[in-house]
Image 1 (cartoon, helix red, strand yellow):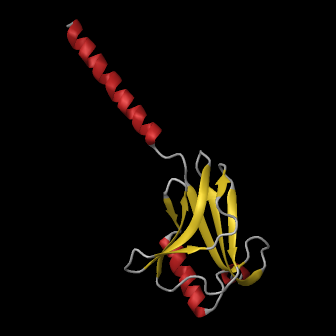
Image 2 (tube, one colour; image 1 turned 45 degrees about the vertical axis):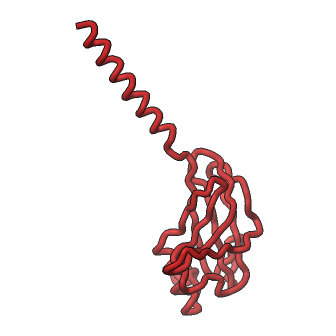
Image 3 (cartoon, one colour; image 1 turned 135 degrees about the vertical axis):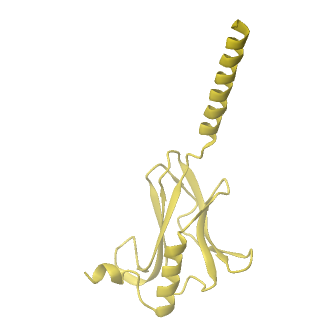
Length: 149
């Protein structure tokens, strides 16, 4: 009987140790990317810009390295010339990149993402990317929604 109890105890301890290892491996870094076409996020003014905000919504600091685009049907990527990157973001900290030229996004873009120093890519939600491309093609601003009320 004591042998069975010891074996059961070892099994429980081993399972708890494995579970703790998985919890510790869970990434504590999380970044959120938001974009808006036609509004300078630094000044709040309407202009022909593309503004991107990268926010660290995780529990650990992370170094944001750059911003890039992935194109339809290829592994080809375009890196956007960021002025404020690389930058270390503490939890709840953010950085804003403003691209002054209109028509920054190619129409064949399927992903807009930022990447950190560990190589992890954090994508802009597909729905928001489609909206950006649609407004870019039509020449209207995404900011029109907030001004209509």
